[in-house]
Amino acid sequence: MTAIAERIDRADCAKRITILGSTGSIGCSTLDIVSRAPDRFEVDALVGNSNVARLAEQAKAMRARLVVSADPTNYRALKEALAGSGIAVAAGPEAVVEAAQRPVDMIMASIVGAAGLAPTIAAVQQGTTIGLANKECLVSGGSLFTQAALRSGARILPVDSEHSAVFQVLNRDHADQVSRIILTASGGPFRTFSPAELEAATPEQALKHPNWSMGRKITIDSASLMNKGLELIEAFHLFDVAIDQLDVLVHPQSIVHSLVEYNDGSTLAQLGMPDMRTPIAYALAWPQRISAPVQQLRLEKIGQLTFEEVDEQRFPAIRVSLDALARGGSATAVLNAANEIAVAEFLSKRLSFPGITRLVQATIDRAEQDGMLAGLNSLDDVWSADAYGRRVAQELAARFGR
Image (cartoon, rainbow, N blue to C red; front, side, top):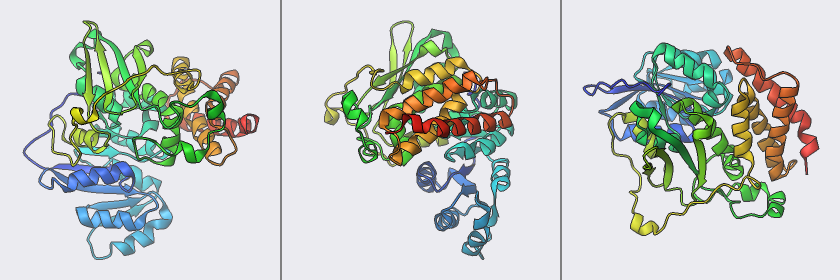
C-alpha cells in the first residue's frame, strides 16, 4: 500500500534499533522483547524525557551507544548517571532529531504527542524503517508523513494493535479486492451507560478500562471512542483506502483486533490476547516472527466473542473524526489538538464526559469558519493548526463545562 514498503530485512546480522520514547509503555515493552533476543537486536540510541534514572538504567542494560533526554535541563543528571559507561549523552529537542537521523535498521517511534512529529519525520526522510506507535504523525501530519515516506522509500510498520492486525491480514498486492477495513473497539468502561449516566460520568470511572492498561489520556480516549476515530484517520493514511471503506465494531473481549473484508465475501481477522508486546514483536521482526512473552490465546477458555454496532448517539467521536477526515486540510490536526484540551478539561472536572466530543466538534467548526483548514505543506503548518486548535478549544471550553 501507499506508505508501506516491501523490502526484506537482512537475516544474517543483528538489527540495530533506536527507540524514541524508551521510558514510556511502548518503549519499555520494546526493550523487554529486545532483551530476550540479544543475538537479533542491538540498541544504538535511546530517547526519553524526564525519567532520567530509568533512561540511564535502560542504557546500561542495553549497552546503548547514545542516550538523549528531550529536556535540556536533564543533561547534567544524565551525564552523571552514565559517567564511566562510555555511553554518549545529549539533550534537547535538536538532539532528539539528530538521534532519529542516525543510520540504523529500525526506529521505534513511540514519543507521545506532538513532540514525536519532528524526530519521526526526520527518520522517515532518511529512509529508515519506522515502527510507528505515535498517533500524531498520521492524525496531525498524515499527508506530510506518507509523502515523505514515498519519496525516501521508508518502510512504515504499524505498532498499534489494530493497525498491526490489519497489516497482518491485508493483501497489499490486491488492494482493489478489499471492501472494508474494520477496526474493533472494546467499548471502554461506559459501553452500557445511558446518556444520563454519561453526563454524570467521572474521570475516576473513565480511567477504569476493562481490558487494557494505558496512560490517562489514551484511556479517556478509549472511553469516548475518540481513540477509534483517531485510529480510523491513521488507517486511512496507512492503507490507502477510501473513507467509506473504514468501519468500527464494538468487541468487548478485545481478542479480535481488526478485520479486513474482501469482495468475495471473505473476512480475515487477527486474534490475540490484549498485550501490546505482540504487535511490537511483529514490527521488530517483520517479515519474520519471533517469540514474545505473551499469554497464548485459548479460545476454549474465552468461550465467546461478541460484536456490536457503535451507538453514534451516545458515542459521536467516530462520526466527528470521519467528518474531520473528509473536510481535509488541517482538520484532523485541529481535531487532535482540541481533543487533548478537552480530555485535560474533563480530567480536571471542568468538562462533562459528553462535553469532550462537543468541544472538539465546536473547535473544528470554528476553524472552518475562520478559514483555518488549509492544506499542510510543512511541519510549520502542522504546528500552526495544532496551536490554533488548542487556543480555540481552551477559549470555547467554558461553554461546554459542567
